Image (cartoon, rainbow, N blue to C red):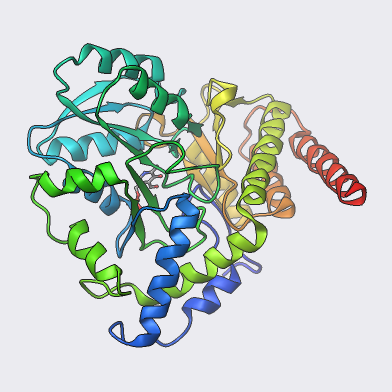
Length: 397
Ligand SMILES: Cc1ncc(COP(=O)(O)O)c(C=O)c1O
């Protein structure tokens, strides 16, 4: 075993802070007892604040894929049409799931370097005079590409087309990392997961709902049992779950919510923005390319870096793991071998970023990937400048 902590710099699961680990490391309690009721009510309310919603949030003992399925089966019927945008690997997986569940997918193709095309969404919805499309599904932050779709523009596209489709958004790699507002942005179902911005181990996932989504769930005909919102929300009202909840992960969730609120969500988002900007400065200084093609869509939770032609990103990642005990994200599906992804989300600070970028820079050298020196320094210069500004602002206040 190498000495020191492993650097888990994939874009999730992320490093679990000691406070959360300590919180989880407690005896499991009776999930039908009064102590559990207090815990459950606390995390259910807390997650409403994280999603920025006043509507019920459902917590599943499942990975994010479960919450994707829950969003679809609670609101739709066999044969319903859903409009999806091919932003990358995760959007493609959600699309595949919709097809398997018996939905008809209308797909807007994409180049995996841009977010969902809101103008095209508006066009497709405007052309759907019969309102056959029942839901528009978008991945907020495409973890496979490091591209963030601007959800308010998608909401506007639906409104401009005067279309009644539900809006469903996957925030698995943006929740508690990138600004997100379920109610204000008029989202009907938001899908979330525990293992990224929430700084928990994998194993919990979420659906934030709306009045319109809850109304749709009353008539939706897709078969569902484990995922059914109705039983869950009814039980949750009194702090209970219809089946055995992931009690110890809920201890961790309560602690994670407390940590996020101590820092303040706007500060959490600003921290992620700062680390993403510093990372991009490093990438440019190395003479490498950021995969995201539109600066308005840069992700603040991860950066995908394009490998120079003829160099395999998996070989580079292997060298980094072997020599510096750091895991970087691989290129998924058609991006395999062509990119690597730097996760800079969750329990992460300036020096974590410095260590991460130092490992990348040394790895580029070791794996003989053509690059210029000075990426780490460019990032440090930016972080230093930001620290100076923050300290001047504190003095002025
Ligand atoms: C954006 C996005 N959606 C969905 C998923 C699937 O979630 P899980 O692997 O937790 O089932 C992931 C996983 O990384 C993801 O990043």
